[in-house]
Length: 502
Image 1 (cartoon, helix red, strand yellow):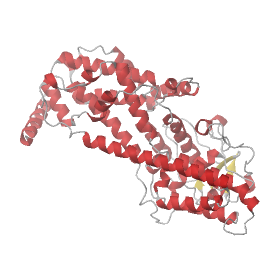
Image 2 (cartoon, helix red, strand yellow):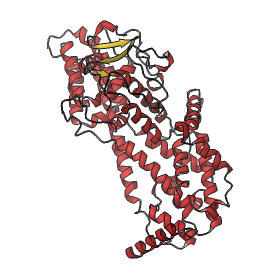
Image 3 (cartoon, rainbow, N blue to C red):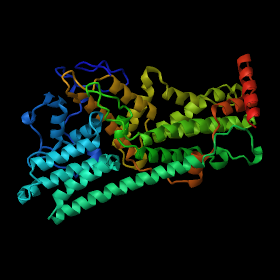
Image 4 (cartoon, rainbow, N blue to C red):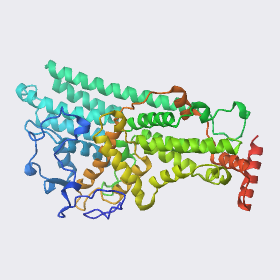
C-alpha cells in the first residue's frame, strides 16, 4: 500500500479522477457528498437540504470545495450518527459503511454508533425527555434501516444483532409507532438473511450434484451423449437463460464483499489483527467460479463431438449466443464464451475453424479486445449503462459487467491510493471514488430478469459435467491429431496418465 498524502498515479483502469486536497479537478468527475443515490433509494428519502451538515460542525473533518476529503476515524463515526438537528447524507452513509470495515469491524462500529446515540440523546436516562426521544427516534431508525437494507450480511454476526436489538428496544419502548417500524425493519432483515442462507444451500447442492470433471472421455456412446444443442438450439433462448444465472448470482453479492476482498492489515493500526474473523467474500467468489465454469463448458461442448462438422456447428452456435449476450447487455457471459473459445485446446482445431464463418466472432473479439485497457468494451458498457438509465422496460435495463475487470478496477483504485494520510486521518476522497464504482454495480444488480425461465436449460448450464484442462487437450488431440513434437509428447503423456487411472 502506498503512503503519502495523495494517491499514486491511478493507472488508467479507472475512468474518473480522484479529488486531491488543494488540487482542483473538473466538477463532473467528483462524487458530491450531499445528493442521495436516487436509483438505489427511490424518492422516499428525507429532504437532503434539511439536515445538511455545516463544514465546521465537526472537529477532525477536512473539506475541500465542500467535499469531505479526510478525517479521523472517530470524527467520521460521529459524522454518521444523527442528532435532533442533523441527519447524514445518504452518500456519506453508504460510503462510510462500505469503507469503514477497512479500519474497524462492523460490530465494533455498530457498538460505537449505539453508544453515541444513547450517550448524546441520554436514552439510558429513565427520565429522558419523551418529546426529545420522539424527535431523534425516526432519524436513528432511518440510519439503522439504511444499514440493514444495504449491508444486511453484516447482521449475520450475532454481536451486530445484539447491538441492534438493544438500541431499537430503547427507541421503541412505550411508543407503538416506533415499535411497529422496528418490527418491520427486523422482519425485512431476517427475510433477507434467510433468503441468503437458502441461496447458499442451493449453490452447495448444485456443486455437489456436478460430477467430478470428466477424466475418461466418451464414457457413453455418442448417440446418447447429451450436448448443448440437444438441450437448446436457439441462441437467443440460451443467452436469456445465461442472463438469468448472471443476474441471480449478481443479486446476492453484498457491496461490502468488494472491500473485504481487498482487506489488508493497515500499517497504522499498530499490529492490531482486527480482520482475522472477517466473513469471506463467498458470493463474489461463487460468481467468479461461475465465469470459469461457463468458459470450460463452452470448451467442453466444442471439443466433445467426434465429427468436425458437428464441432463447427457448436462453435457457430456459441458465436450466435455470444452476440445475443452482447445485445442484451450481458458482457460477463459474452466474455466467458469468448474465453472458452480462445482456450488452446479449442483454438488449435484449425480444420474445425476452417469450416466456421468467423466474421461475427471477429466482431465480438474486437468488442472485447483487451488493448488500450479494454477501450472498446468500456465504450460498449457506457452505452449499455446509458440505455439502462433511460430504459422504459426491464429488458433495456440489463447491464452485466465483465466482472473480473470490475474487480481489477477496484483493486487498482485501492492499490493506487493510501487508506490513511501521514497524520493518521482516513483518506476519504479515495473512498468516495470506491463507493461510486460499487454503487454503479449496486444499481445493475437490482434489475429483475425479464425473461421466462427454462428449468431444463438452466439445469444443464449449472450441472453438466465439464472437462478438466487435461481432458480438453486429450479430446482436442483425438479430434485433430498433434501437429508438432511438443503436442505429440503432451498427447502421449495425457494418454498414459489416463490409462494409469483406469
